[in-house]
Image 1 (cartoon, rainbow, N blue to C red):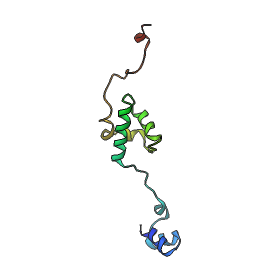
Image 2: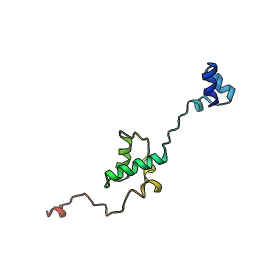
Image 3: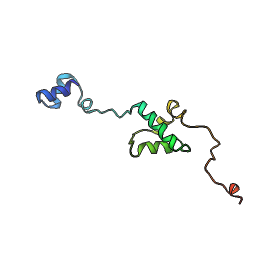
Length: 104
């Protein structure tokens, strides 16, 4: 923060400001990619409510699409804090058709 304020106030270069403050230039430009955990959980609950048969892979892709545009990994969605309240255990065959079910 100090380096950014120094650049804005005095108009010096980023390199000079970082040297004065003792900060690496890569740290000056760094933007965190972490999403808000609470907002992610809310959006995950919303999508899982809309599509109750979707698993973690499909929910991850739904959260990567518009309007969410999250940059999350499937493992993040599978974490117990997020996914345990969403998924309900089943036999895994819900929504699938088979020859036996069709009477063939």
